[in-house]
Image (cartoon, rainbow, N blue to C red; front, side, top):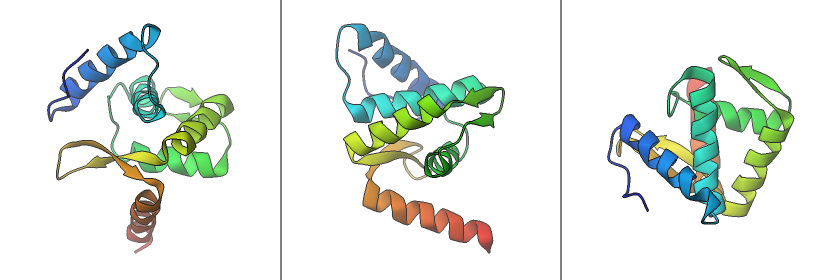
Amino acid sequence: MANEPSNSPKSMMVFLKELAATANTKVLEPKEQLQIEISEISEAGYYAGWTRDIEFYLWKIILNGSETEFGVKTITVEEIANLRSLSEQSGGWWHWSDEENEAVFVSLDKWQEIYQQFLDKGSS
């Protein structure tokens, strides 16, 4: 299996693609699958492994639950339901950490705090 990703978005994409390639032979944990799904939506919408603030945008979509455009991609109701389900199964959400320069998995409680801070920052 692939080594852990280094601190660059490109190496993270390589890692995620290698991880996804193992999906046919290994059942992925919901947490791993969630990161892959977020990254694939980012790639399909903006040709980037992790579009800036994608985690906040997708969370807002999960809360609203309706199909929406994301760059050149339409995020479907089925994809939204899948993201919601994976988040519930894993008990968390992925968040880009500027300190670690990579996506990190946080509990749903911690994610709610991060998301609220993001909303508060945007309204000030």
